[in-house]
Amino acid sequence: MSTKTVKRPRKPATPPEWRRLCHYYDDGSQVSICGVGRRKPGEDHWEDECRSRGHTICVVCTEILENRAA
Image (cartoon, rainbow, N blue to C red):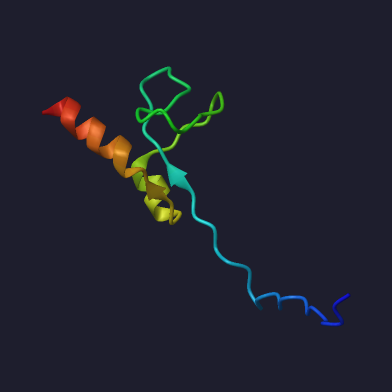
């Protein structure tokens, strides 16, 4: 049997800042354009609001949306 002692990792002084990944949705869809994100009923996000909160916009959704416009 091993006699080594395992120390607990130190907790950082400040917790990491988690960023949200925001997606684009078609009008009434609950699934994002890229198919990865799920939207709760009544949950809407606008790109400028998301960016001001430090959220990141999904690059796959952005690319699909741009290709639709082209």
